[in-house]
Length: 179
Image (cartoon, rainbow, N blue to C red):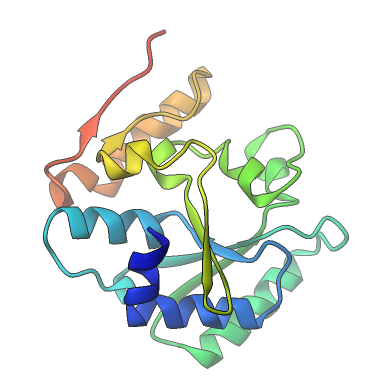
């Protein structure tokens, strides 16, 4: 996975931009990785200008949403062709009704589906992949809820219907958890 991202000039440069912000645990997750992998597995090119670029970081010393906005504004100035979204995961538990998170990877454990809970971090020529549920579902093109909690499963079902993933990637399979 890391080598594929390094070989994709567009995504590697985006990761470099985020690295330049020196964010604690700064990474790009969700569709940035998932869409890239699923496009490749479907034999098509992937252009991340058509989707959100979700930047994640963890700073429990500064929970002010204005910081996210400042980082987004900087990224929009540096690369306006991308749809930037920057979120400090140290405060996202408040929006999501969860217990406080202790890291970016921990926050991703609460995301609706396992295949989306993947992020990439660049450090010079190195690329680190964060995948709290492993890469198995992502690489096997499986959409599975990350939680058995009823409200999380409902969020998963809503996302599967509203995002059009099964139309875009017809080889993807939905696997529901047993109740």
